[in-house]
Image (cartoon, rainbow, N blue to C red; front, side):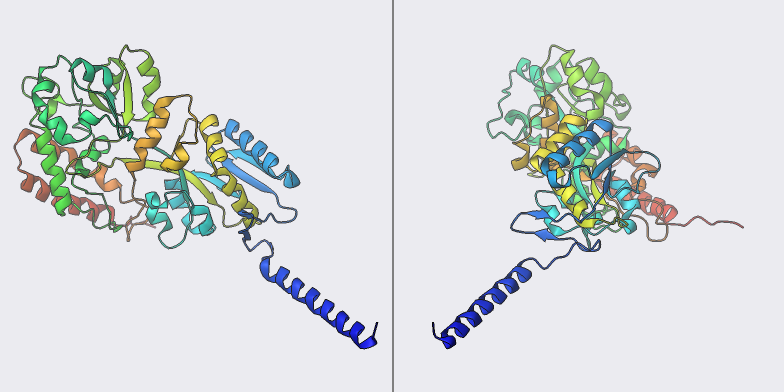
Length: 442
């Protein structure tokens, strides 16, 4: 071969080799140096740092063991690097944290900023205030009230129990307009139709959202939103509720509606009620001859009623030495298989979208119904007062004489307009008190 041709061939080979090497570096420039999170899009996974060691905070040992086994199966090349610790009063030093939204708020300044790729299939808007500027917390479970319907009682009243649109809510009572139109039916039944709790604000809160109201939806702790038209519509809805004698009492006064939610389940004495997972819905259902179904609340004026929920989920300790591996652990734990581990090894209700929910299996059908119902719920607003950041704004709801106003509205001693004015004034008084920082005397 001509020497010149040989040289030219060698130059071309060197150029191609150099170009290929350049492409390789460009395609994968991320280095896991203990400070950098490396997401490999082609693999849809995060790199694991050399010599990484991870600890994860978990709600119980069964889930912790399942997490370790899942990691070792998923990443046999890094088996043995994940350990777990069960939640305790000293929790927070682990690399990956399974914590409540309140704990996430308290630890906010010490949490690692999460890569946006982790937010896929996670409803981060449920905890908007915790993620408004930087993603720090991924909610994956929820706890709160849902609507509970006694299907057997409906059938006895001659009503259909079909759910043709498969939204979990029986079609014949899927709006409060339909329910109000059946007033004569409810008042003719020999059963406590709707044991409304007119003495407790958290359980009664969903009914105040009938006009689209959401407490502190501006995320301003000084403005709960009671002056809005949406809240006024909610008060008008409460007035409409009061026009039906749900408990067949002689007076239908507010005082005849104390907390009876637990008794209603035990005695099977309801057509509609409110229930949460802590109330042993399935155990009580099995003890009664009736058939129950958990669902979201009926709508009103096309608005979804939205009870408040408390969430739990994943975060990463800002002091972790292995942020990329920590991301990878969370990534696999929020997958279908990962969420199934949560279902199988805890009593928590998953907070997932409808697409993911369809791939999960539940031994308890009411637990799946709760998961469906929580899709329309809102989380408690995790915001604090500007001058007293140690106190959360949600305390306003409990410190106000909230239910006194609702009871007066129910009994007709206050009009809707008067009740709204009273709420605004009372909230202003309480917020002023709660926003005042404590004075520490020397």
